[in-house]
Length: 295
Image (tube, rainbow, N blue to C red; front, side, top):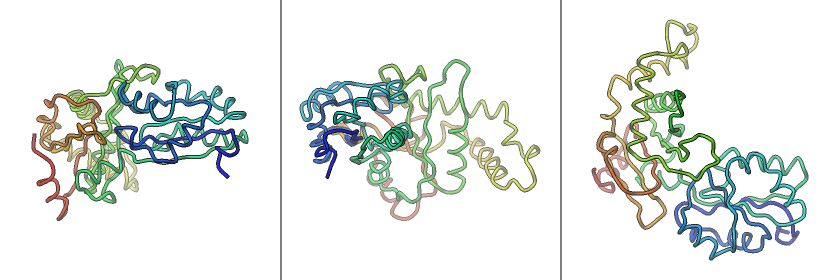
């Protein structure tokens, strides 16, 4: 028996990446049968045209931003009596906020189901010919807000590359950092500049947790990370090699490879992410060379 048969509860539905026409049949059926349909509008962007396509498929939807999802009293109260769908671009469990919704439903005895879909992580590895098991931890570049600029994304990136792994770099969507405004996707130029600012911050004020003189003798991980950051930052950020992935899942999809300096000058496209490859083996090197155009 499904929630559609029960008649109430919460369904987290992935719309896939790019056009919502890629939603699964189960996702469309659940959304169509729901009395309330909400679109999560702060961890990704669907766009006005995409939203219209989605509404043509499933009916009228209301957009919710960060505050509504992190404090989901409205959603949970409705789901106790009615069938409610929360539509999420990509896969609904890519963001920890949505896992929190599952836990809240469990604690309050609200039936909850998940309809999975393709996510950016699956599209990127397959789309550029890199082996998905050779990716390290993905990172997100956030917009600097005032003087606040965390360097942890760059530190994790350096560590993964030091170990020979590829790194998926996601671009921020919210210049304010609040999650309560309409998303404004980071551009390639802004992303490269953010990496440069992080590198400058680390170079000018090397933090204690990366300073080998401050680390315990048996702190193997800390010493590895320190070495990884130092070696990577010995090369200027704009000289690093990267692959820009723009508007994946749409007919406007674009893949380009080159130095980060060249990538920063690319114009056009709406939603971007980037891969910084580690060691390229065999078919990976051939795929990058033949399947991705140079900048």
